[in-house]
Length: 86
Image 1 (cartoon, rainbow, N blue to C red):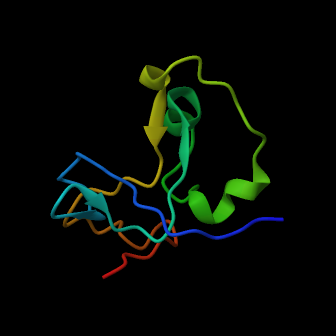
Image 2: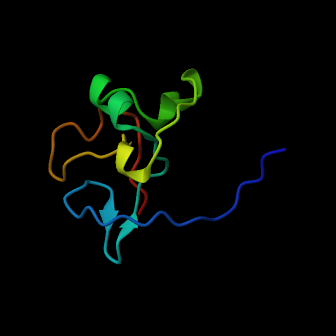
């Protein structure tokens, strides 16, 4: 059984569309993947499709990326189906 709990995602990447004051991620969902997966997939592949992919091993935190990143002010903010929470 999956139980939803309130959680906070902290993010230091302040040029991301989802970044909020206090280093909080304001995306309604995110997808963390391996660098290899992230660099090989288009921006439209994101958290809304996460259940379609097999889990993968990264080996270290240095080999992971936030696939939900969108540059602040970009025209791609709607490319992935992720919503910005207020």
